[in-house]
Image (cartoon, rainbow, N blue to C red):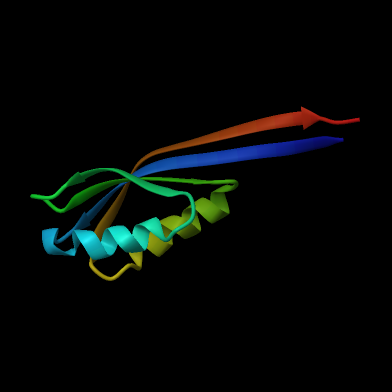
Length: 89
């Protein structure tokens, strides 16, 4: 029997008005598997990393980020998928 262990990670640039950074950051942190490793406070840009066990969950998280009040734009910068098959008896 083969069991797939998928892992998906992406990085995004999230554009907001500089004054909205705190509230948008709080809402992003509430999304599962989400980190914000960088912020440009002058330009209102957040570097966001998201991870999930499958692409559907990851894309749902990205859509959730787009729906946050104060988000002006979300740009996908990078996406990686790691599929590992594991043989079990």
